[in-house]
Amino acid sequence: MSVSDPVADMLTKIRNAAMARHEKVDISASRLKLEIVKILKNEGYIKNFKKISQDGLNCIRIFMKYDESNAPVIHGIEKISKPGRRVYSGYKTLPRVYNGFGTLIVSTSSGVTTGKKAVEKQSGGEVICSIW
Image (tube, rainbow, N blue to C red; front, side):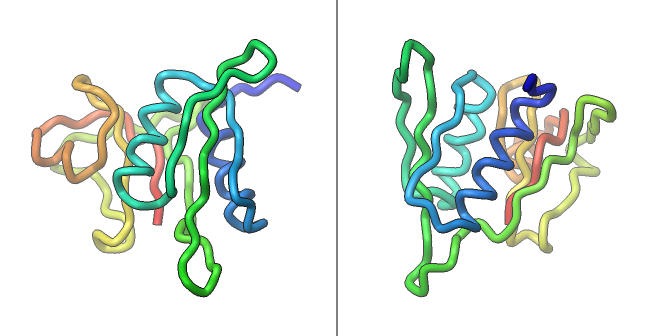
């Protein structure tokens, strides 16, 4: 099975692991995926992550985060820009996720960042995904 959108595959694995209440999930590593996982960690959606080498392949092990009632912290995660239809937005027209309670991940010319930081830097780019 070939994966045509590795980032969407990563987001699906995270969504499925959260719904199944798994403690951790392993995904194949890339620079873009690592930047997205760092944002998830900084925004408080996951406990932690670490890079591991498994059978000669580099992986990112993500430790999922749950609240006190064992409900996943990630309620939803959705890929916005897809290989067949890329979505770009200027900093003035970046969409808001759940009226500011969610997080938007944007790939700008200065790197992968959240929607709020992109607006602060006044730089738009490709809208990768939204998390709430």
